[in-house]
Amino acid sequence: MTSLPDITSSWAPAPAEPAPGVAVRTAARVFFERFGTAPRWLAVAPGRVNLIGEHTDYNGGYVLPLAIDRHVVIAAAPARGDGARLRAYSAALDQSVDIRLDGSEPPGEPAWANYLRGVVRAFGERGLIAGSIDAAIVSDLPLGGGLSSSAALEVATATLLEEATGATLDPQDKARLCRQAEHDFAGVPCGVMDQVASVIGDAAGALLIDCRSGDVRVIPFADPGVSVLICNTNMKHALADSAYARRVTECAEASRRLGVSSLRDATPAMVESANGTLDAVVARRARHVTTENMRTLAAATHLEAREFAEVGHLMYASHRSLRDDFEVSSAELDALVDIAREIGPAGGVLGARMTGGGFGGCTVTLVRTDCVAAVANTLTIEYRKRTGLTATTFVSRPARGAHVLDPLTVV
Ligand code: GLA
Image (cartoon, rainbow, N blue to C red; front, top):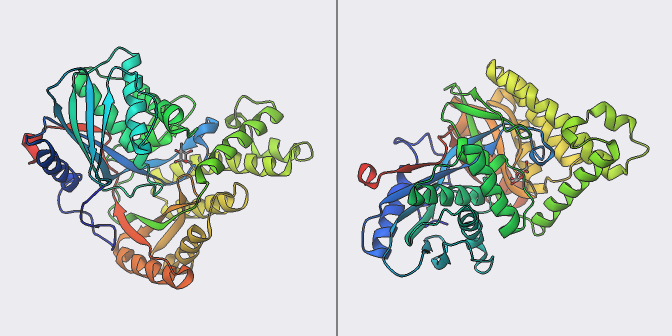
């Protein structure tokens, strides 16, 4: 949802100014053009990239994402007029919606606004009803690119409503509220990783999240010698949402068969010994989740010890497991990971894997910083040769979680 200049089209070094500067100023400008006055609040929520721990969150397992310096920004101000209403304009889609803030608004069209409606409903149910608000939404996160643009929109909305109602939600509660909005209003039975990363993101590093207890530990990741390169396949396959929902059901089936309350409590050995009694597909799904939990904990330990080569090996293993056992990769994602592996340590690549739900979207590659430009270049050229498609790449440092900025300090 952006009319920003396309800064994803080539490798970009770390921005010279603190993110989310560009998106914030664009949002303030769009708000002014739309509503003829300056915004009072700038609610900012980052996307995320997951280093490892995929399809484990809804199984009560471990994930290791970092919030990235790409954001959804909502510029907003109290509005005049009767009733409590949110008038929101999306710059990317050039569309406006008008939503009742009392929580009585059902899901509907346009579909993108359901992320707003769901969060508004949850606030309304808690009796947290703001007076009317005008809002302009701008984002420099690729829409539907697997970097949690929808979670960032939910979290930005919740952050705005906290400000407008004077409420402060507990961060875990806020993340769960946003996830519930996605379940109920967008129909995606997602886990809580994306929302937690967007709410709790930390510029100091990646977040090791225990998705059962909610515990979050920041794993410092500020080594200037190693960079996180995100590469977008620019391809999203149809039916990705229904395939995601099927995986959730298959995992629930696996845990029932294994007699555990969630796959978090199962081990690869338990899955192995139940092989005869489990449906072959369900067994493969369970093997992925149980081995991925172990890989994620090991990766956090290695990251903490700055053993990046080991983290890289685990990323490749994660990708294989997602491709072969969980079957959520795609030809385009595989091509990017293959190219990265072919470049290898000699060319500065430490590891690569698909990131997010899969069926398209992005890969995450750990790269020696002095090689980032060359790696991004090779990935783009080779990807085009192999798929005929254009990939887009960018580097991100870990970013701060959702917050509100005072427009006077940024414009
Ligand atoms: C999507 C979901 C997350 C998580 C990932 C897969 O991003 O929103 O909750 O399940 O897929 O790890």
